[in-house]
Length: 310
Image 1 (cartoon, rainbow, N blue to C red):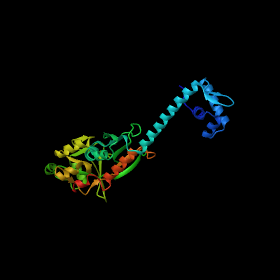
Image 2: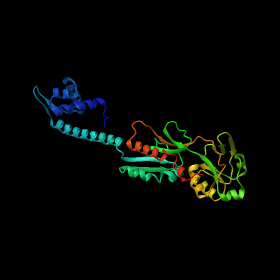
Image 3: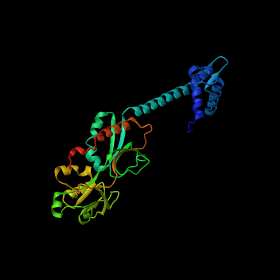
Image 4: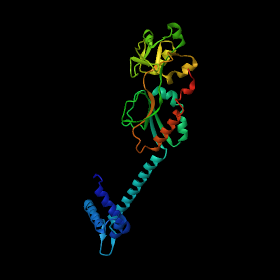
């Protein structure tokens, strides 16, 4: 099958214009071309197809049987093209279709999944595919419209919007504190069982700051994992001291299952919560609607701020 190029499209347009007006002069007026140009394009179209499409006399122009059939098929094809264009254009302005979003697994499940139904109720014509994983998906290669990411953003190819600052803090169970005591300074963490999160950017170092000083300690302990939820379970059970995002431990602080350790210190990482997208250019309405909704969720602070101060 021969690919359709610009010349072939011009030939078909000239033929359809003649078929519609049964006049080379009329066709030229419709396309803004001289009648001789229209005649040459129709002749080239006939040579390429190897069939006569139009009978010409000094007074009349009429379609041959083959020309009439072709005109009918091309007109129907043109209608399908226009319908496809209208459908795509409507998809760019109407909040409908499928929206693929990637969330960080633990944080997304805890703080965004419970809120997602409000977004779906607002846009009933939308289908959302939510993918939860701790790995960073390739938005372009894997066909995602947007993603929420936490931590330090490294991929400069993406369009990013910072939704808020991410604080990493320390916590342990009251039982652990009763049995092992509480460190008074970051350097004393070296004498404690520290639960090691291997996906921390500075792992195995914990860089802690009180806003003036920065202390660095190599956190070592009896358990290491790439899963923050597993380490949270271990901290609740009294295994050791956990360094993690405030979002992960805030409910436990409120419930009393964990207590803050070194509350004046936080991890010295300029991390955040981000909405990332492949591009802002001609973004479909569904992506814009999700970006607007997500911004509302963080407009007055982080979703976990209201759980309770510690």
